[in-house]
Image (cartoon, rainbow, N blue to C red; front, top):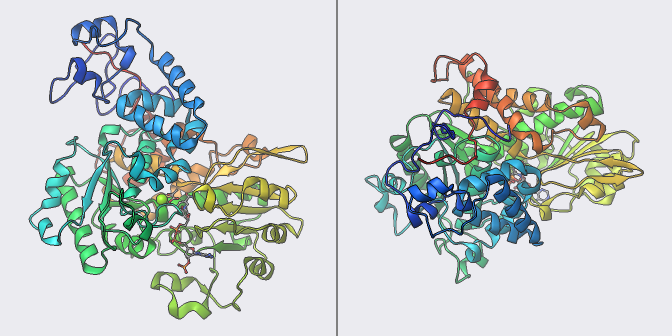
Length: 568
Ligand SMILES: NC(=O)C1=CN([C@@H]2O[C@H](COP(=O)(O)OP(=O)(O)OC[C@H]3O[C@@H](n4cnc5c(N)ncnc54)[C@H](OP(=O)(O)O)[C@@H]3O)[C@@H](O)[C@H]2O)C=CC1
Ligand SMILES: CC(=O)C(=O)O
Ligand SMILES: [Mg+2]
């Protein structure tokens, strides 16, 4: 629903031309301060009446523009920048100046702007965060001085400094594994900010309900430690008890501030912490690790959908993963007993991983079940030749590992093969779309974490699908929020995979796509949200009662609509 609907659950969008509202809630904003308030600013779209009523006369040139014309003008400006990072900075400026116009642009031009505000460009923004930082866009909670300052609810106090009292979703990172770019310390803030802008644009969650957080525990990135402009703690990463205590304090402060149903999404933690935190907090909080659970759901959706082109069932296929981290190992949320206890993908198939048992002794515990008795191979190409996978998935976070030889080996049996390169950003992708289609002589079905343009090979245009958790988490979160769910369960993720796969049509398959395009994402998110909510009601985890009759309609209705409100 690119245009959104006329009203929403939070009352944010309930105004119409006939029923204006006041542009403030707590303090009165008027005149210059109204124009500096990004949540309420309309720029040249303030009407004559609003200019009179809110002391704006003289602060704006005479013309009154419609929001549509403002959108057209901004898109023209953004398109003039040829460097993606400059486009990113223009978008962030807009977000800080006029939030509704920012989201209008993003909702209506999602395929064009997603690569800017999201992957790959937001990765580059994190790398250069020190020089592009202008305003804090979220909360920094850092291990300053020593832990004692946190005792007695210091983090609780920090949370109260945030501009909004009501928050429904927090995306938090500790900056240790930012995309495939490694440890970026507190510069990882670009990730929660970007992810939350997708919560709003793609999933319709009101921006005022979203809180980006970066936990600062230091960095092991020597370059940053030696950079005089680095903004984070200038120390090596805290580990062990010191790290765990800070996280515990943070988790304990959240519910007293925002209530039981606050959704906490972990993003880009290194896997040695990510799995442990998921196991620890998924039974006490509404807790979701996007890299582990969201990505597993998006991969499974792609696999289910790809069967239409590959044939057979999942169990008929042989999978080879390069990389055995968060993405590869899928979901594990510690809900033992009532829940499924193995990798999400393995719920559908009987799978053995390719972590050789010769390495078993040195493996982290959670990887051991996936060790396979196989003679050790050191080259991916040799592994492809030995295992003969029908599906090859790259999740190592290291770029260009799917070489010509690897792709040719995949395609050598003259059959359709699926190649997924999940690692982000572009520099870390296993191969490009062009390489996959050319080297496989058009036999590869290709999907990637970052967007690639369509590619013509032998007279046929192939459109790569984007295998990115962004197709999942905004709708997933919306479903949890709209149902008032108090916990995340694995079978919610299974529902989501099926819901996403079901959105792929014959027209998409004809172009080689195994994911639906992002231009339809709000509709897709509403469907995903409805499935998640239905599961939450079925499992007795939903607290917003009674259950709406039509959950898709309900999801669409509570989506944030970025059209301007009229002020009385
Ligand atoms: N498309 C999407 O939606 C998503 C994409 N990603 C991307 O996936 C990538 C990996 O993320 P994640 O799984 O969280 O990272 P992890 O660090 O958890 O896992 C990386 C894995 O790759 C292995 N590895 C590292 N270097 C090599 C190498 N040279 N050859 C083979 N294997 C190697 C590591 O080995 P070892 O086991 O020895 O440590 C580890 O198992 C990142 O680029 C990230 O951006 C992440 C989430 C979502
Ligand atoms: C997409 C994403 O979450 C990642 O690359 O980490
Ligand atoms: Mg991530």
